[in-house]
Length: 156
Image (cartoon, rainbow, N blue to C red; front, side):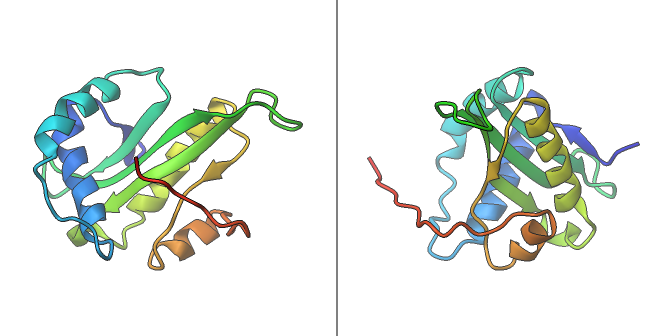
């Protein structure tokens, strides 16, 4: 039996908790949790959509029933097709977090394996993510490589 399972709407609170663990680990991040109340119902609804373009895979903490040890989440994005990807399907990993007390057990890698399979099953030809220096070795071991072109971002 796999440690990893697809998160459902009942997991929304724990998914948000682990998302905050990830946010808190980033330099300069806003540690506020005021947004959780607004985000929770939206997240619960998205987790209840089995065939949407969003998926979260989780690992339950064996020593703490009702608590998640790890989270991996991503979305499918549509881009106009091209040679090699006529459907224009691209995966994007945006949240990988392991509770500090559950690290170094392979949970993030197991979750990434499940998410990558989910992307493959839906026709994604590539998967993108941004990585912290601490997480970069995991992604390199999974085959991710840095891109030479810089990402530009505009906040609206």
